[in-house]
Length: 451
Ligand code: NDP
Image 1 (cartoon, protein in one colour):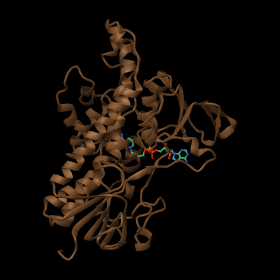
Image 2 (cartoon, protein in one colour):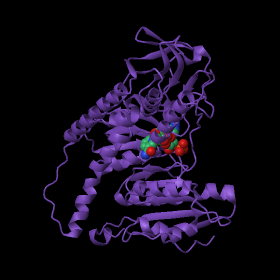
Image 3 (tube, helix red, strand yellow):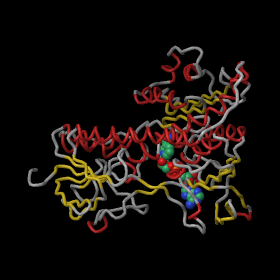
Image 4 (tube, helix red, strand yellow):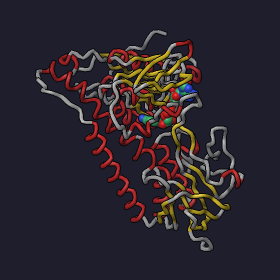
């Protein structure tokens, strides 16, 4: 391997690239990573971390309201957006430095700048050439705004993390993770939110009871949900924008944010020149071991558009390091990957939805409960929680767990372990609950729903 400067050259220091680089270095590989924007990638800078901080910030408004029913008098309330953004940005900068230190301590070289692959063993960063045995592409994704007239007036989640001001009204387009999370964030911060989604219900691919429950709860909070419509044109008016929708309707607001998916960041890397296969979205086509169509080039994380979640990207990064430098060929495990949507209320989910289970297993059993969380018996808040188990009656195995309600993500994480161990409904039932919690409902659901 010594005929090259490095054993591994990683392009992109996000969650995936950093994990692969550090683990590879720990196995003795000589590793460098190039980063043109910010260390830590989307998750740290304009994704999971600042998003969750914004969710915490926005949840306070409802908690202030709830407090009254419990006997608290809350005085004058004012929200200082500048302070939130400054503190969030300070935390992001701290994390950027931690990422730099983690890489340095692992002995990974950092090349700041845009990387381009010149040939299968040479990468150029800002005019400097590096030779390497393996190249790892971990360049993530970037928000995509559909090509409609006036798209230049729209913001995306990238800009929403640095709001120059807090609007009175906003239109959010898209019904995926980012759309519903930001609808909750803006609503909680006092913005009037209209969310537009092209399908009949948002969160396509999630369990239908999850989608329906979240719809009801978001409507109850006062979020204006518009389904089955598409924004066809955006016009700038004085201090406002107008979004023309299919069917002749139009909506006006101060801002419009598109959360209509993200595209793999694979342009200007020299991939086409090398003949590396990309799919119709520009994602790097890889095999089960994350190997691209050139045998010494690998790709992981959102730029491969498999399952675009940070922990999955990290698992893909580790698997590449194991495969290349620990003599331990490893495929990432995509079964029972849990996920949470930090909507308000939260969604947590693992395993098969009811529809997926019916398609795969035919006959299935469903257990479902909806209830008002204990806290709200005093607060007067009429938010309800929903929990659901999907079970294969022939083996008793729990195929899916779904929840809408406070801390759903925290609760589902533990259940994902159970599902990965092949837990059965009888084992759920035999587990003692923790009382009084919402989570105990998952081990006390006894009656299955009629078909
Ligand atoms: P998603 O792919 O989740 O959702 C995109 C949404 O936009 C869908 O509702 C889609 O509709 C709609 N859409 C797509 N194209 C158009 C169009 N041309 N016109 C109108 N609507 C359109 O993307 P997000 O941007 O929400 O999130 C990007 C990725 O980030 C996701 O893959 C997710 O995995 C990840 N993420 C994860 C989070 C978490 O784990 N909590 C949080 C945030 C992001 P349709 O359903 O009909 O296709």
